[in-house]
Image (cartoon, rainbow, N blue to C red; front, side, top):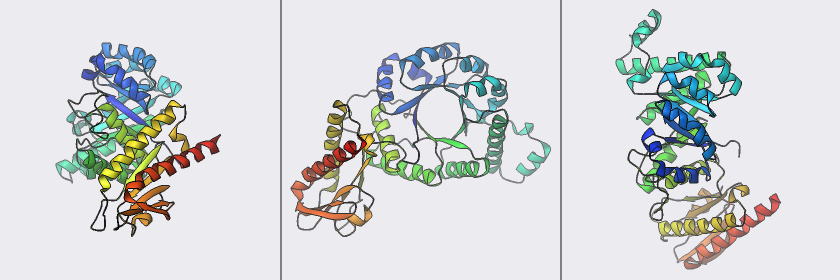
Length: 381
């Protein structure tokens, strides 16, 4: 795996005050969430940082909404600080301790008017350039220039662990802003999944949106923020393994998407074709059955003190036909491809391995997947 993109979780002030969710948040920190962003609006919020830093197996990143809290937050047991870029002067007052503690700085910029420095503060030359374009483009260009200047100032002050978190509802504008800053400023980026309550749409939509960024090598942190009004409960997951209606389901979705790009250590990833007229299998039901049984298998390995992530990630393909199936899944470690005569093919590394009746395919796939897992774990010693 060339690089790993860590998963962070944003917690609002309202959710932080509801302490009943803390045990569920602690649970997902043990399953892949490496940092918690805590919305910090007053001194009481800032006082919770040290307490929570000792509670969770994750770094604590206060997201400061009041610049007067910057000093207190930096002195606390935090690994970084989240801040809107308009507070850069207040932040730079603490440049020495930021550099000494090597804290990560997460700059947020978005559509909200509070995220823009006033246009009147720009130099005369800058305003002349901005006046040549429309209002929307003017805001966008001004924002890009401000972000670039902020990152440059922080680097000149010896603060190199800086990340940019852009918030924009239009994924195309978001993508172009991120690409511009990456190309011309060398910025590192925090990116967020697109909220979607439908299971299948969520996987497709986020794979497309995040995939376009990953293709450009944009994305150094994934920030997960549940939709407004969603519960953090880790219960009742059986009906929606990828749903963003709950915390564990949302983390599961992000891990699967990152795993499919080889950007996060996952035990296994399933790829499936969208089906067409050649497909004669109940592909969706079969895929869900395979996923369920692999989860059970992974749980048994965990109980034995073994981690499927140590295999490097097993890629399993479920294809509807043997015409294009194995070829489309040529990078899969193992998979199945259906046939018209109620049979299917088990294939390994894109090559046919065994032909079986359709009702035996899942059992055989699980068996050979387990053998592959055992081989890889044994090779690690």
